[in-house]
Length: 121
Picture 1 (tube, rainbow, N blue to C red):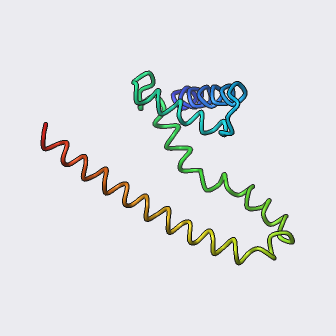
Picture 2 (picture 1 turned 45 degrees about the vertical axis):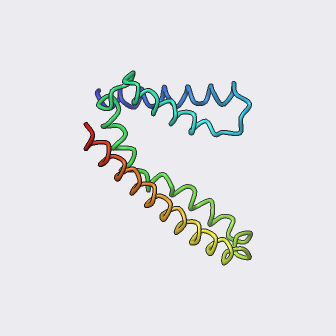
């Protein structure tokens, strides 16, 4: 029952993201609105982390399975993808390395900032 309640909370936040997408004329996906709403609710304390932790952990564990339909869809379009496979693969590899480097640098800055802030407390 606890897991069902936690899924309900996540689904409610997702639904609110869908409503925001319909109301706001911005080119932002509803899932982003939902994630921002959930982040705001968690940071502000409106929703406690323990209220969604179990369902969130479960969703993260099954995430690879959720990509299977997309992969099958790509196989269905193989004829269209084959001519651009090499450029797309190169772009994907370069962007992946770039994102990893930027993420690492941002993480280092945050860790350093956290250490500096903890010394002054």
